Length: 360
Ligand code: PEP
Ligand code: MN
Image 1 (cartoon, rainbow, N blue to C red):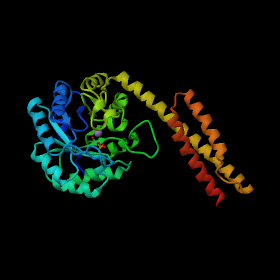
Image 2: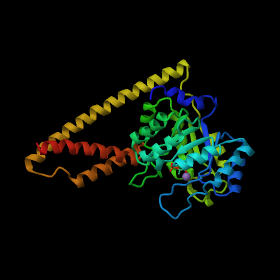
Image 3: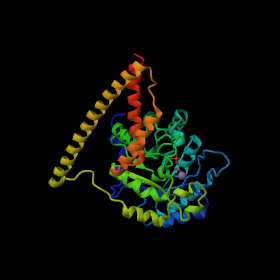
Image 4: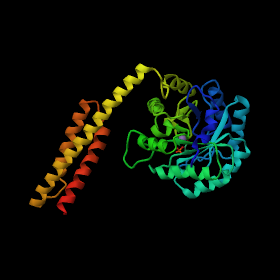
């Protein structure tokens, strides 16, 4: 993919003063529900009205979407409110119906991006369309699958493209429904710098009270927009009840978000920023130097252990270190989650060093 700039023409042409906003219910439930939410969102910053018609549910037996009839409701939304519409497509039949029914933007869900077969089927069905197509990241933290999905669409001649970052599922329980793994989103931005990237805080957090915080982080990382699930009665929604917000709450989130410019020519600002960045560079170099020193000490321990034929992994000692560091971290404003992650990585590297010596 070369000229990725043209892929964002659709977004640039909108000339927005604020990030792109996609909002609406997780699922279309009834005609009344869809229209009521759309009318309540009409006078807000919302650019696209979303509603899932075909719902990918992890376990069978749950509400799997209203299907084709929902497309008629989306047509009514457009006719009555003037809002453009979007929905998820997961196979060639969905694509055909969505295009026939004049849906403006189609997105590909996280459970489809994981499958190159499905991605190819969708890309073939969409070939040459001028609809906007957004690809959600795959369920698992695999950057190549995400990039591959975009590339399949590009190769099929789809010129209005974008991506949605909706977080990644993990085996371990975290405070997120799907952990953001921001570094992966940043890597994605580095690969396709011009491709519009939208954040989906609803599926990342799974909880409505964390949506503002995650949205703000996304904007600070120069994301182009947000997709936020919205319902007039979130608690009684037929899917994803805990993460949906009311139209009023959505408007409040939009008001509370600080939209910062990517750059600013003000000289004093530049100077201060350069200074702080320089301090960060110094601190980063110190970190690397210290870690190098720590590994040297670990090597010496390896030599001692080899000498006495002692096992490399000493769980009691490791738990002590971890406990102490979490406390130390806390007193310096570092989250337990971060300290744990960092020390697990450091510990693993120490073990690798020692194994090398013990098994030499
Ligand atoms: C959705 O947007 O409602 C949805 C099913 O999302 P995801 O594919 O991110 O799980
Ligand atoms: Mn949902």
